[in-house]
Every structure is written in C-alpha cells, then in structure tokens.
Length: 367
Image (cartoon, rainbow, N blue to C red; front, side, top):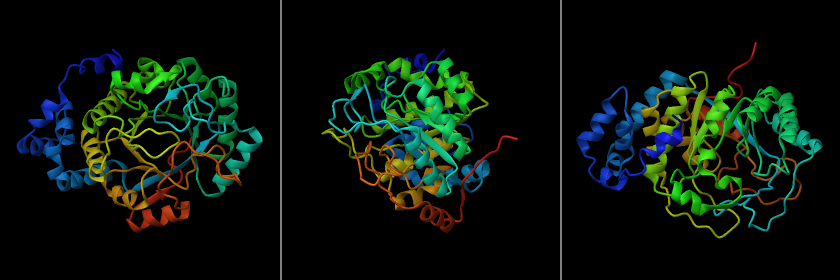
C-alpha cells in the first residue's frame, strides 16, 4: 500500500466537522500521551489547541533536546536553472511567467560553489525548475558530482524521477531528496497545476517512496502553507512523514513548513497562515513524530526563526539566494520567491549561539 492509497482513505473525512468538536479534554489528553495516533495529531492542529501552545511548546522542547540535543544544521540552496514546463498558479518559475530563463554552466556552478563553501556551509540543496529537457539527468549528475567536491552533504530539490534515475543520482553523490506536494488536496492540486508533468498528483505524491527504495539517506516533505486550509495540509504532511519513517527506517525523515511568499505572478494565497499557527504546526509535528528533522528556511524572518529554535527546529538555511546562480551574480535577477531573512551565515550562527544552541555545519561523515 502506497501513501496515495492511505491518503484516499481520508478523502471523505470531514475535517471541519471534526475539529469543531475537539474539546479541551481531547487536547490535554493528546499532549499527555507518549505515543500519539493520527487523531491525537489532528487534535493538536485544531483551533482549540491554540490555547495550549505553551504546554505543547514545553513538551516539544523536551522531546527535541532528548532526540537531537541542541544542534542546528545549516545549509544553503543553490538554484542552477529556472526553466520549467509546468504551469503552477503560485510559482515564480511557472511557464506562464515572462521571466529571463537560464541554466548555469558548470563553470558558473563551480563559481557559486566556491562562494557558498567560503561561507562555511557544508550542506547544499541543489534546486532546479522542472524541465527534463533543459536540465536532463546527465546534467544533474554532473552538478551533483561537482557539488560533492565542495560540500559534505548534497540534497536535491528537482523534478520527480523514477527509481533507477534516483539511483544514478545517488551513485553520483546525492544524499537526500526534498519534494513538496504543495497541496495534498487532489482536486485543488489539479486546479493549481494545469500544465506539465507536475499535473500528475499521484506520481508526485509517491516520489519519496521511489527515492526511499533508491536508499536516499534523507527524505523531506511538506506542503506550501497558504494554498489550502492549515489543518488538513499539515495533517497530511505529518502522516506522510510518519508513513515514510515506518517504511524506510534507515532514512532520516524531515518536514518543512514553507509559507507562501510573494513571487512573480498575480497569485494571492487562499489563507494567510499566522505565526502562531506555524508555531502550532512545529510543536504538533514534534509531539506526533518525536524523531523527525524539522526545517525552517529564509522564507521566515530572523526573529521568528530565532523563536522557533527551542521548539523543535533541527535545520535551517542561511544566506540563501533563490535566484539562479544568485551567489555569484553581479546583477540581480528574479528568484523563485522573495526571501525574508537576509542574515549572513555568521549572523545566523550568532543568533543560534544566543539561544544556547550549537550551529552545525556538518552532521555526519562516511568513514
């Protein structure tokens, strides 16, 4: 049974009716539990649970320190292409947007690698638009091989591949995969993705399973918060992560909570996700899945990232650019979205130290 099959079992579930009936007792009982089931997780995502954020935060902190200590791994994304065949209503790289498109040469990639490496970053996330013509597997393999010369960890955030293609990238040096379902609501998904390979909801949903079978060390999922209602999206992302943890026990499973940020195009998010809801999501996931990596990116402000650290964050980006080759560019170009925290790596490290945590530039070594 794939996660798509599990997801279908909830297609007729009335989230609105359920969360309206969540009581104080239900929330308190779920917080007290050592092992939470899916309905406990849903209780902690309900509006009623907002009154218990302090209790949730305290327990989330205790669980995080127990399982991860006080280390925060830093990474940076490297965008090598913004060519895309998909028409995604909300994305700056969407094929409908009239922006300057480019693919970095290997010389340009190396120039960016040198700059990011000089920042002290040892983990990199390779990011492309979704075009297998402009960035074929052969190009991606060479990218990974080059990045591996400069960084200890190389994760990819690219168009979905089949299992054998993921194995080829792993052989080239790729360690992990990040892929966002964007929205777990299949009907809404089809409305938001009207053109391109990304319009195949099921194939995208099962992407992490193909990478898991290809023995990737890190699998990271999430939903773009703001496209649909907060409760169901975080719920499905959470049970998706738990499914992956159960089926791929040798992999480190992670979740991200990207909130919609301004980008090229006229798309307006359906819902504005508050800071308090984001904090609620982080705490609820930590209580639901004790050992899970939780990432917060430069989509969020430095102040909020600072406050999220004790609640369960284990990984954050620093000195990020969402522009193609943005670290070496002398003229600014259009990024995938606007970042919200422009702090340097050293400034992010100081912020982490001020919270009595340890910034980590490297989290493992192959002997």
